[in-house]
Length: 294
Image (cartoon, rainbow, N blue to C red; front, side, top):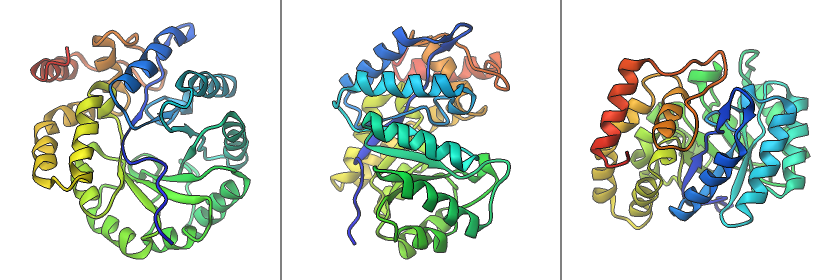
């Protein structure tokens, strides 16, 4: 079976502008429009960067509804519907399918974790309930569980499991993924590994960097897709200090500070997250100035 990517290139794991009163929909709408105007290839709504884990159920559903209506079919839209509660993930997934999302981003179960057998059972249950394709999200640094290559191979047999956001950071394991589950479309989940993963056949990135630098992230991916590896590698190296600064504290703390400096939101994150330490923020903003972003 050939790969069937939901998008190719760069998708922004979009922040959710928040303040003490809740979701700032005015800035959220402006931000969606700007991302599309800047040429982004797809948008991911209410994922990790969108603070989906601290949105109430009502907020989560409202954010998904608002975003899909604002996107209005201009780019593929992917809904963050994962949870460590499988029934809740199924409920959110069904809702996002009804809204018209093009795909679902479903993270491995955090805190309660799972065996590989448990991962297969959970993802299969969600996929069985979904009318749209799933992107499995592997981020063991946050969840404490890793999807093994053999598990990917088993899950790839499901018609609704077509893609992977791979953020395990282990290139050797990612090569095994390509070798054992080549039918899956793979997206880098780490901005510092876009070129290596795309060089193995990856379709692009689900990016934090593209919140602040959408054009550059799209261009980097476009160079890889066109075969300009040297050009893409040069951009990967050029943006590495900014990427490092965006991850010097737990995501989305730094990117919220960055987007606030750009005028897209308040510098507000929900507990247990707290605003960026001033020393780190000063360094991040200095790097952004060096790139002409602010």
